[in-house]
Length: 299
Image (cartoon, rainbow, N blue to C red; front, side, top):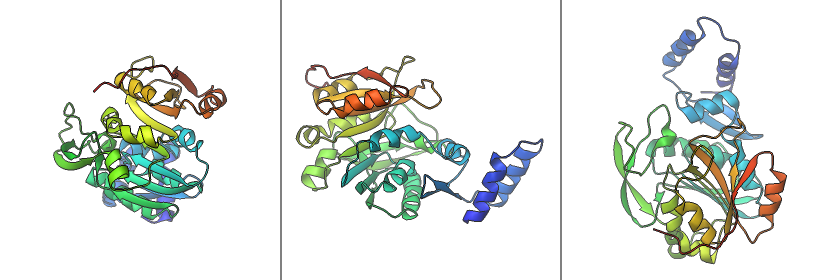
């Protein structure tokens, strides 16, 4: 859909309500066969969106989705950054990273073929750093695993875990490890990582232990299941990160509430920027745990 039509329809969608608005909107969209909108994202970026999906509807309605993720991670960018977006979905974070001139290289990992098609389209709309889309899932070993595809209402729920089946079908996807890509295939190691893999975070980090030891990224933002107090449910995850010298900060949502899934920032605790970030972001972030001596990470 071209920019003008997208702008006009978005203005109508976000405008005043009236008794027949939902009916009219549904009629228009069905007549268009739900062609994707083209909307501005950030100061100079573009995204194509399907408002039937939760994440994309949030961007369509509010202009952004979890902007605190990009804000927190890119604060650690200096120059020549190599950014890995693990679980890139449609590319909302990736497009934000491409608009930052300090990012030199961007690698996006998205095993869901439908999300990946949209991701590829969105990246093509946004020139910038060198970029590559990988049709892979990152894990703790190289193998094939079953990916359960998320529902149409939220395609970001696609996951590798066997405990969730959304009735949308499943498919075999190739998995590899971060260590394999860096140490064997000789990709540049990431300096900044964003990770949103629906409960698979611990497995991804287990597959990255050599890089975490030899060439650790400066900062990692990841989503994790947490309790009502915002504490990470799987304590193996913070234990592993602490073992490799990271401290953790929980990123508060702008809505000032705690959800079942929250975003966390992990920073090398030897870096004074953790303290700086915590002090500068006291109104948005809550320190969850700091560096502590930890035993070997548990499998």
